[in-house]
Image 1 (cartoon, one colour):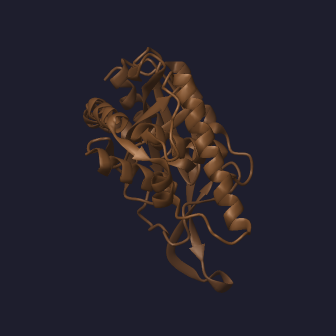
Image 2: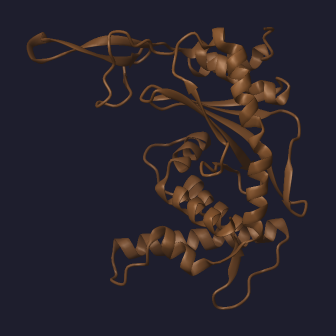
Length: 298
């Protein structure tokens, strides 16, 4: 099959993942031999994967060219015209976005989402994962809804993925069909009204009564989330909330929790915007928020 991925995108992936992941035998005390192997990066010798997931002699780690093959297959959903963002954390993460405008309007003309394919080529599991996600420009949220059927596909964990390109393209074709289903669930969330106070308690638990760090953290979190809700209401042209216990759409609340976790939650080090988005996708409170809201809007 002809390569449909632009050379610039392929070079970007190569540059971001400019190293090999090599397999070496693991030793016991005094150099005692074991049947186990570990994975290490060639550029900085850092250990890859988790300590409870040793590899066998026959395990072959995937490499950057396999990741490029995944990106190439996913790019066929957007006629090969894509941009990518890359991040390595015990495996390769790539966000694939179309260069053309493929927006979905959620509320008026100012609340829009755009498709994103999130690829996770890790070393701990038996399969690569790809998710149909969305980017909401009003809050810069990059998110996925794992609970929506069809928005996640698994790809067999093997080396030399390029030799299976036809199968990869077919798999990503199935993922591409989920964009419409994802849009329908977003519309359902927009139509679902939810009490703010009760929802936040369900997701994060009640605010501690006793003064202390736990209460301060909870109150600061609520302040950030409410601030996001009001700011995004203003930006999207929604009416201001009224009453002592205002209701918001499930869509607004989902993005407020996602936005807080992605942009405001304290993190160690200095993670990039894409790294923070990946952390938020794996955050227990974000997943609980989506699970609750999707069950309400079903």
